[in-house]
View 1 (tube, protein in one colour):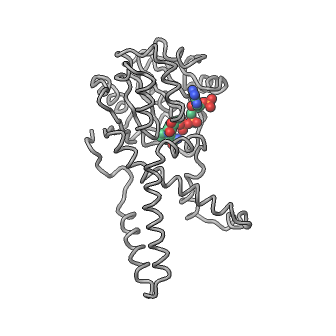
View 2 (view 1 turned 30 degrees about the vertical axis):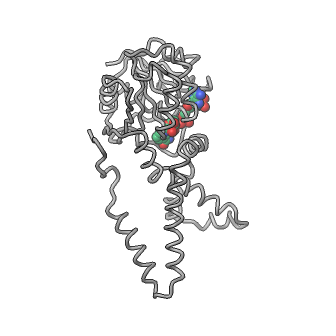
View 3 (view 1 turned 120 degrees about the vertical axis):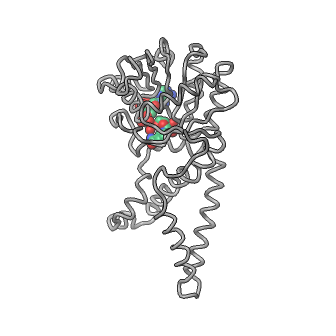
Length: 295
Ligand code: NAP
């Protein structure tokens, strides 16, 4: 289907995309670029890319498909660097965890070529980063959310849907605003809380002893606290307003539980709150929820 994938950011998400595209027979050749030449070289050694490019622009030269898989704060500079090679026939996508900032950055960087850019967020990933962890199966069965806007070319939007479907994803569409509000609640706030949980332990003199006591509940709750600091710094800053709004909901819920613990009611209120949380969690299944304009 595509002659050449230009991959900018040969890490976990970009590398996994390249491997999945190759396995699906979607691309003939992958030309990759990463900030550190050692990463690009490693990606070639691992067979994730076929050719190392010394710049983002040269990774895009000759490509008919481009994936930008860098930390979201690097999106604008990356798109600016490739703008001269972006034509209406080139499909350019990203994988950033936030979308409104990415769309704004892309509009500033690509200007009249913005129609070629289809913002994407695959709901897949891991708390590990780097090309060593790239996995052709990462996207298999995952949802990917496309957040087209007024100027997105419909032909490129359809191409983007075909690409993600071909590597095993279920494709949905929503606006960048809907995306950022929703993922602030179910992804960005949980990461913030996991970081805060570890922060609250670390702030205590007995941190080491407390961590030594911890069991599976702590392991499950804090798994995502091991995520990449640069990626999450960027995500929390980019979606600051929505995440802070969700934090307020969380603080209210925490206060409700604290008040229920203090209440002189034989624990009824506390049990009711836990029952509601417990039944909601028991009903929830990964990927069950129907999304707007599900495809
Ligand atoms: P990663 O494994 O750390 O890969 C990021 C890659 O981008 C690295 O190879 C890095 O190169 C490169 N890079 C950084 N700045 C660059 C720049 N200015 N120009 C070119 N390359 C640059 O991170 P990742 O997990 O793949 O995350 C990439 C994107 O995916 C982020 O936007 C994130 O929001 C999104 N995402 C991640 C997940 C997840 O679970 N990890 C899930 C959904 C979406 P060096 O090695 O040289 O530093």
